Length: 605
Image 1 (tube, rainbow, N blue to C red):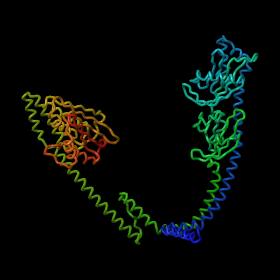
Image 2 (image 1 turned 120 degrees about the vertical axis):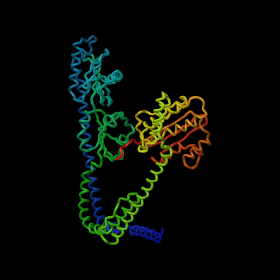
Image 3 (image 1 turned 45 degrees about the horizontal axis):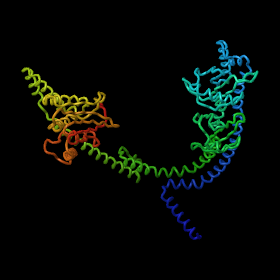
Image 4 (image 1 turned 180 degrees about the vertical axis):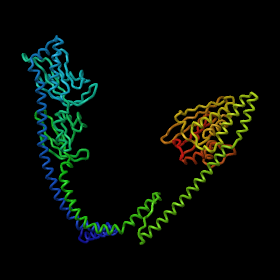
């Protein structure tokens, strides 16, 4: 690439940069200039000094942590050595060994053994249990948790093999989870075979279960200082201890830290779960366990960060003083325009309860005044539209209600009922009384919203009349639990659908007709189902009914009015997402589903 080409690329880049800069507002331009000329050199100097200071802190932290890791591991070795010595104490008690070797031990001697084991268990506070097994299948134990292992019968064979392999030398078993009938905990074990001092013949073995809190006690102070964590791994790559308690007893064979720790001691940087650490490690010459100490770099360099922040803060104070004048002037000029822009964005989201505070009579003030006038006019127009729509819905609702509920003269029916009773015609009196209840329920316009329980009561009265008329031809099953009776719904919701089934589904059907009403809760909606076993309808008839309900087709007078009316009233009351859905096929009955929102009755203020 020649010099001319390079110069052309540089010019185009400079032009694009200038266009971007020129499109910024004045406040941003002033800030960029001051930041470039004043702040950038100071930031570069501060960064260089903080970088070398942080590096020095890291080096010192690694040296300190490596030394501390080795010391903590030595303390742990001392603790394990104490456990080894405790396991050897029975070898120096001839009386105890004699009782353990006796095949016919007496009760008093058994109590002596138990007391001796109890005293052993008291030496270390973290020792949870001590088990002693003899060659005759007897086991003696003392347990601080008041309950022995659930798997004692399973592990005693493994313990015996480990004791035999040790042949009198203490054997260390890595951490396992121990379960009792009361609780569970993690513990590591020390096992030693017990032998007669006279002929060194095996007479049993002893096992110490030690809670891993013994390890935690050695390292918790250091973890609190470093805000890090410590993990102990045995020579089989199993996690003996994890100060966070997440990885205890896990297999660490393929862990990155274990692969990096090739020497007996050292350190390396590592990232775990997205967080950077300094990891120091050391290996025990006694147990061959490796201890890994993870120190968060953020914590290690916290003091360096504090120093850096103080430097930047001090520099920022002086820089801020220089910037304040430019910011104050640019902010004073641009703040009203920014305010109007934010108010316009609020209006775009539909919030019209905004107003510009007009303080001055300049061009921006005049713009704000016209903005307030515009928002006020928009609110007035929206209120007019809303009022008109509400009045329209009320009128449509009243028309539909009057269409399905003509005002019957139920007082006349009451007179007829009394006359029937005087003539001892109880059946006619009951029918007249039931019909009066139906009509009284229908013409009560003051109560437009009712409950499902009220609707079902009205429906039962209606079915009573129909069964009296048709000699109990119809069977109705209500599969709605009483707890759903208080669900609010529109008035006369079920009866027109059931009436439609009686008039059309069972008109030419021989035998008994069955109607089943059930409920299903779907999220925040309720779906009622009214199903009959009537004659059903063919696909052409079903299509005509659906188009009539949707308002795209008119049926002959008296056909499908009930279904369309209920569907229209539900949509007017609850919205277009709700209403009726009809399914039917010839000879298989008809199924009408009613979808409503699940809203309970509320008191109107």
